[in-house]
Every structure is written in C-alpha cells, then in structure tokens.
Amino acid sequence: MRINCPYCGPRGNEEFAYLGDATVRRPDPAAEDAAAQFYEYVYLRDNPAGSHRELWYHGGGCRSWLVVTRNIRTHEISDVAFADAGDKP
Amino acid sequence: MKYSAFALLREAFRGHRGWTPAWRKAEPKPHYDVVIIGGGGHGLATAFYLATEHGITNVAVLEKGYIGSGNAGRNTTIIRSNYLLPGNEPFYEWSMKLWEGLEQNLNYNAMVSQRGVLNLYHSDAQRDAFARRGNAMRLHGVDAELLHRDGVRRMVPFLDYDNARFPIHGGLLQRRGGTARHDAVVWGYARGADTRGVDIIENCEVTGLSIVNGRVTGVDTTRGTIRAKKVAMAVAGNTSRVAALAGLRLPIESHVLQAFVSEGIKPAIDCVVTFGAGHFYISQSDKGGLVFGGDIDGYNSYAWRGNLPIVEDVLEEGMAIWPGLGRIRMLRFWGGLMDMSMDGSPIIDRTPVDGLYLNAGWCYGGFKATPASGWCFAHLVARDEPYPVAAALRLDRFATGALIDERGAGAQPNLH
Image (cartoon, rainbow over all chains, first blue to last red; front, side):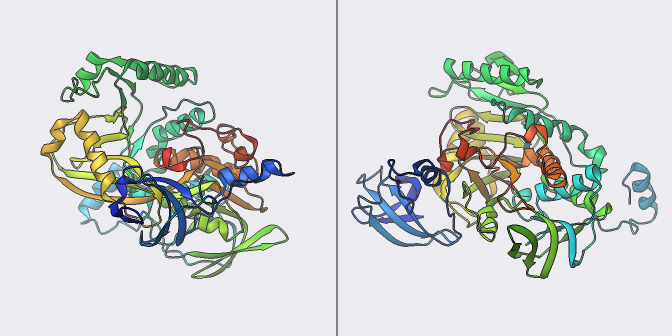
C-alpha cells in the first residue's frame, strides 16, 4: 500500500502511522450530555466495509497529518489531503 | 457414527466405504428457537453447548461461506490461559479446562497438544512484569513457572541468547498451554452439534434482521427468511456489518492479521515460543511447518490480505530470537479479519435489541477462547444471564469505565 502524500509524493505505508476514523469529532466538554457524547467519540465506530476517511501521520516524512480516503475492502486509496484544524485529533 | 479404534479397524476391512459425512448439508427451515449467525468455531461451539448443556436443539447455524473458511482456518492454533487481569483470566482458564476434555467430549481428534507456551523476557523490568503475571495466574489456580536463562536454554537451545539488542534473560512458561488442530476443532464442533439435531447451513449469508417493537423476530438471508425467537451473532471481523443491520454501532474496528508457515522441516521446536521485545509467536505443526505470526497490520481492513511492511517486521522479530529461521524458506502467508475491540478484550453480552446477543471483540485471541466462548455464549442465550467467568465481558463496560485493558494501550485498537 502506497500513500500519495500531498507534500512528499507516493511513499510506502511503513512511513506512516495510523490513527483511525477521521469522521469522529471531539465533543464540547461543557455540553449537557458530554459524558454520553465522549463515550461515542472515544469508543464507537462505524467500521464500514467500503469507503473510509481516516487519519494517517507521515512520521517518516513531512510529519503532516493526512486524511486518506480508502476502500477498506480493496485497500484502494481514492484521495489524500492535508488534515485541517477540524480533522486533527 | 461414533469414531473409535474399533470403527477404524472395521472400516479397514471394508475398504473404508462405510464412513459417513461428519455433518448433514441442512436446508433452512422456516422457524428455529435460536439462529446463530456465523459458522466459525465460536458459533459452532455455541450450538454444541446449547444442545448438550441446555437441551436446545432447534438451532440453526448460518455460515456465509463454508465451515472452516474464515478465521477458524487462518489462525496460528495456540491455546493458553496466561492472562493478567481478573476479568480475563478465569474465562481463559475455563477455556483451557474445556480444551483438556474436548476430544473425549466431541469424540473427535482435535490434536490438542499441551506442549507448553513460553513467553521470553529480555530485560529485568520485563522479568518483573512477567513474574507479576505469573503470580496473578497462580492466584487464579493456573500453572505458571518463571524460568531463568538456563531453564529456557534447556528447552530451546538454538535461540540467540546473546543478541545485542534483545538478550534472552528467561521466560514465563505455562506448561498446560500448547496448540490444537484448528480445522479439526470446527469440524468436531460441527459434527457434535449436527449429531444432536442442529442444522448447519452453509453458503447462507444474513442480509437483514427483522426487529419488531425492539425485539428480534428473525433474519433475512440469501436463502430466504428464517424466523427465530433468539438470534446470536458470532461473526468476528464482520461484527460491525451484521450489528449495523440492527442499527447498532459498536466499539469495534476490523483489522487484518497475517499468519505465516514455512516449508516442512524435521522436528525442531517442541513448544510455543513468543518474543517479548516485540510481538512474535512460533510453533511447529505436526506436518513440520513452522507456524508463526506477529502484530496486526494496524489499519482498518476487510481485505483478507495485508501488506509487506508487517511481513518484514514479523520476519525480523523471528530472526532476532532464532537466526536459524533465515535458512528456512517461507511457504505461504495469509490474512484474517480481526474484530478489534477498544480495550483488547472480548464482549459476550445481550444487546439493546431484545433477543439479539453479541459475541465479538476477540481481537487476535479468538482461537484459544473457542470452547469457553461457546460455553458462555450458550449459557447467555439459553438463560439470559452471563456465565460467571464471562460476567465482566460486558458491552456496556466502555460506557461505565470497567474496561479490561491487558495491554494498557487505551481506546486504540491497532495498538492492542
């Protein structure tokens, strides 16, 4: 599996560290139901068998956080972009 | 038919024409008391114990492929009960006790071999951690021995004891641990369940769950609709997909784990050895192949195959403890789908849907758990209450904070 880093170009996946699902969002700790929201945020995942947006860190290269869109059934990568502030863990 | 030395002798004189299939090719009936989704080791063991321990035989096991096509035929066949935490250790020890009586119970040769599981330690700090784990095991009545370097050397003399980075200082040994023939385990459970009236329905994929007023009433499959009073899920890497049919979102990610086997060689290693400075485990099959594996690839996957960096990583770890491995050719490697839970421990529990039960989160430790998983899941399904040794394996522990995190890695499935 090779990830086409927007900064470094195509690199082997051993240069990257995987964090996981990029669609979960850290909830507001001041919210009324913060405990329930944090439970979902920390533990529950869609785990789809298809297209998956996920966070990878290019620790062996430019040290950027990336949002990779990958088909989990085939490992085919359709999109790689820099993570923005909302995506970052 | 009962297998015995007499049956073997009789068939030898009859040209082996009298053997019958180990289980029927059952057709789905319109209604069952219990439908088990997933014909792997855990699902079949559940059906077997439902029939033998609870008298429930109007049961169907639905398998989307054929028996033995999933993780049951893809694991590295190690059985052990050397866990640290009180939520896990009694459960795995119950599994070990069931392994010890399994073949007589099933009337099937599962080739259970208690050849010993030896976990190597490579530093003083790791020795202390292993001593603690061994003591925890002994407090639960499980056998554990802390070996020093000479004790390990007597068992496996060919390891690299003076490796500059990972010198071997000793090991934690569980003599009752070992290996079992993985295919024979599912075949044996399938035959045992079938003999007692359970329908094993292969090539039957579940496509929907019928839920009326919060209660499950049946399943839609590629072979028609089947009504059921209770539905039990034991589908490993596909847990999230099947649970989504009931609208459930679970603390589980699917990951790929690779396993490896070498060409057959003469008997070289007569126990299971694990590398403590990384994650590597090796044993030798009765055919002579070295069977080994390491970490999961570390990213979500439903692909049944992994990537080369982990192949390199596993082989490097093998070479670090056993340089002779480099002279042996690798025969093949493959991948299986792991239902990685958020704390690295399994779940055997009810779900928010009445009549729907969950058996999941086995991470890469499902094979050794097969008998106890089936036993405890059958108890839960039959009586609606957990079997005592599985009482901590709850689905709501992630919300309540009563996690069972052996590794201490937190809610990061690729690190467990």
